[in-house]
Length: 370
Image (cartoon, rainbow, N blue to C red):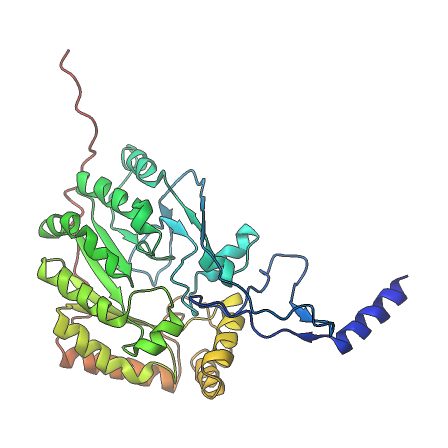
């Protein structure tokens, strides 16, 4: 029986060919490849009978409840500027083809591909849980980062407003917060962030990967356009909120030529800080990004991956602290020198604006005198 199955599988493999990429309008990943923890690998195939002819239909976003018991995530990474963060959502509808957070969906039995950007898990109790955690006697105040894994202002936030509720709690406790996003929706919460900023409690960084609208649309199909992100920098800055720009990720041979133009545009919009992260391709992200290149930039694919490996010691990724965000080697050094020169030229400080942790207070309901 085993021999028969082996022969049959080999025969089928010889006559069946993979179907074209499962391209979906408005989605970044070209397929929904199986996560690394699944025992089976699934791939759509054409068996020659002509039964699968239609292109994949529109992939709709579904939102489920994340039942996590705590909302603050802590880390001990020496190359991060924070030790705690909050992610109001798991998965991200922005659909960024390069997103290093994609592999986290594999822990849920879902694909880091199109599942990651279409099956979102929201944390409706996040504000309540945060209030409870801040009230613990053992809590010690440090800046909380929003947007470290998935974007707190992705499209679903318009309706769910979980990020806004979190900010309301932080404002009530005079707790410092730093936000990273590629969405202009952050300007909705200027009414909360501006008063916090006046007390030295809030700052925002807007991620700008490319100023090329067509390229940005393919890389980040449901994120704000480059023009709207620059507009957000201006609106936040005009409101007195310290705002920076993150050139992240910086993709070799694809977006690296835009370093100076992005920093100039951000500076003219009012940005005060700047930072960058070299493209990271951990776990499933490597195959998904190579797949994206084969569809959207086939003539540049080999060059992109060659330079990626040049910055990672010949590998696709190097996860070591201290080098994972910047890379090593001549190309990485060149990028670092160009970035430093441009930030100096355009008056963008790379020293981060400090936030005040001394104002923190436990805010609770007022007790009755009787």
